[in-house]
Amino acid sequence: MTPHPIPRYLSRPALFFLIATLSFALFVPTPFAVISPGPVTDLLSKGIKVSGEKALKTNGNLYSLSVFVNNPDSRPPGFLVLAAWISGDSVVLPNEMVYDIGETTKSASKAAKREMENSETIAALAAANFLKKINPEEELSWSKSDIKFAMKKVGGPSAGLAFSLALITKLKFPELVAGRKIAVTGTINEAGKVGAIGGIDQKLIAASKAGASIAIFPQSNCRDITVKPKGLELVAVSNLTEAFHGLMSPKIAASLHCSG
Image (cartoon, rainbow, N blue to C red; front, side):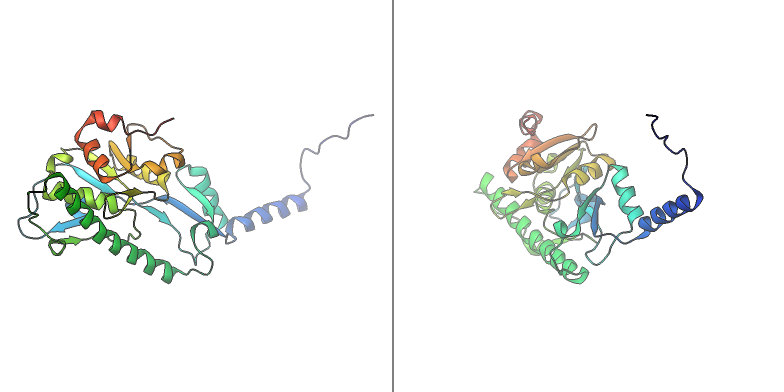
């Protein structure tokens, strides 16, 4: 039996229909959230201001990391979703995995701002508690009222660890950074425990693009990492003490890598 030959071309009407269908699909709103590498903020020069003469001179950069994500009311067209998927720098997730059902842009922005403000307060307390722990006899020369956080267009709690390390650097240990470009992400509580964050791959990519040589992030995010930007040392920590000593000692930092 002679096999039926595969057509070498579509009929003109069918080809036009296929092109029209694909073109339409590229512009149809989709129920996805696109998460991409966001801007980095140098907390030592822009993100945190300390009043009076309490701040010490620092040399280097300590970056807080973020991600871009479309708001819950938006529906990115198919071509943007496709471009994000092809780029390799972004991740595409169903909207319900990123936002609660019924969540709006207004409610999401309000919640993110509230979480950021709460994170700032907790980070200052964590830094104060850490400094008192390592030197109980020394009185703190600053209070929360001396500190002004100046992060713009960024929300959520994931800058907590970065805030604490920046305060420790600016107020007591400028040698913590020592001329390096350091990127940091992770939530924190008053006791200095570091918690997981979202978008870890995209934040590491943002750190690499900013020229960072070290990225400090939560140990609990190790299982989520699928990228390893070239030239970026990854240091996974569970608490503020590990982050501090990891930055102070290359030997300790080497012991804080993700296992496996």
